[in-house]
Image 1 (tube, rainbow, N blue to C red):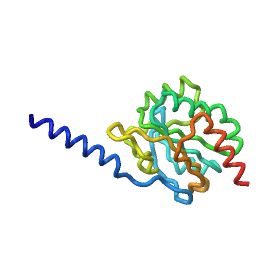
Image 2 (image 1 turned 90 degrees about the horizontal axis):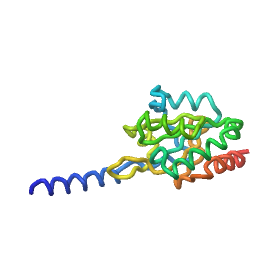
Image 3 (image 1 turned 180 degrees about the horizontal axis):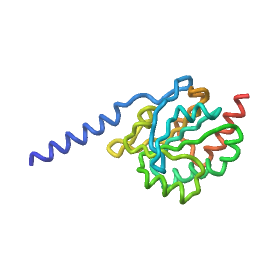
Image 4 (image 1 turned 180 degrees about the vertical axis):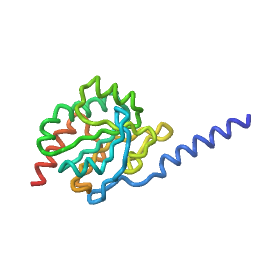
Length: 173
């Protein structure tokens, strides 16, 4: 019977740990220069991406191949040509492992990089809230220019993510 209080204490501790996180990055903050693992198992240095393109969109989603996450990814896939014409590199990030990210990318023909952030290193660096216990990221997006955050989407649009970013870029002129 001593197991029940221990399990309760572990559950409460996990919940509190999930609530005690850094605040999400804000407009004007420096974008994290972090290295992470892609859907191919290769390392990707975010700072290299920031330096190569005028803009980088880093978007976070809870779980690959779920309805909302699929809508969001497909919105960006469908708007990818317009986004790249505006100089936007797209990086999707979730708590999924490499195999799940690769399967998601292949199934929906996503033309951009997906990050397998199973250790929540990238999620934590951006201050993205996670769901307690499971560690999955809330849906959020960050548009970066010159290594700085220039736009945030804390509500996580799904089927209109590409349109939203294109509108933000149009307003930058």
